Image: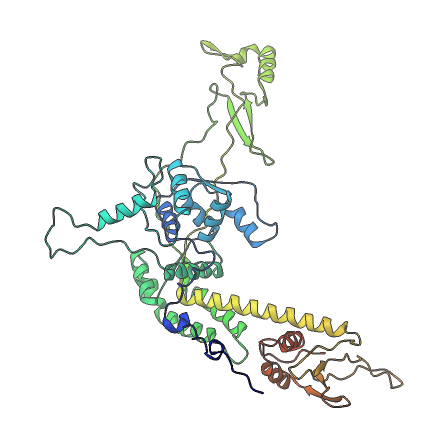
Length: 492
């Protein structure tokens, strides 16, 4: 007995047109952590004008970490540019200002930062010469009106053929990526104030400006050969980058025979040094001495009369004059312990040690980044190998398998003994390749087989489908027993 299907059920509903096929997809989301263009442009403005700032002296970073040591270096800075010279990166400045570790001491700069932080990625970059100068923050409608006014043709040049005034292009994503690449290169080269030189001709032009033409002529051939060596050392081989060859090439590039990295010559300062304080003597024959304390910022002041007695305070001076009244008589005047002797002195200001600016060739920076990545890679290899050894050493007879595949076959790994105890004298067991046992449960009785060897296990892991729940868990479990990065087997 048949039944008719209702027409509303029989008809198939039209499939919705996907956004990818129609080209109406959403805009790509911005990279997490990227500062919006107005905030990044404000930082450039603060760097150019060397804006003053105040860095919190208490180090809020995790003790023992790399950022803790970096904060110790730049916490004595008083301007934004000085923070960069002492090793701070743009991301460090963004983070410290946002968290309150660094504050902008000028009220105008603080208002501009608050306004730029509230702006989005699509907002235009304001003119910081007039932005928030009157103490008020412009609304978005005022910014749109100002931008529209800037696009209108000027009354002085009202010709219909005249082109509109040129607008400054807003920073794009490529600029942020370039900033990240620059920060990574500076970090790989040791941090600090670094100027990267793009090529050998650019380096020769700079040395010509510094008056080092003779060094340029002497090292030209050696530099070109070293550049080729660095590029060859950065190329990965079958087992990755050769770390030893890369270190050797970097040592050669930094040697005096090649010199692809060095210090930027500093300009001579003709300003005379300030006169030393605390050297005014009360009278001829007397001597005033200031000694800074090693344990604190205080300064101890001593007075020495002509006979060499040390006087440390006004009571000492008063008692000295009572015992020797003639020492207080200097010509027509009498020395007064309260007026002519001063035992207080301002602390000696600590001048922060600013590392000199360096120049580095781009090939050397690329080699430093390749060396850092290779060392991090081998550290990960060592960590994974130690984990594998620990797992195998502590392995107990398993009650559950490693996992299951799509056919519900169970995969097992069994520990082996380190010695052959069946013999009279136990001796170490020879190394054997890693073996994964498979329990086939499709039949009436389970059938056992195994995979042996690194390449076979790699093919097994590659054949597993990550989209399935069982095989995804099995693949994750196999990762703890497989060698990493395509290197040799892990010794048992």
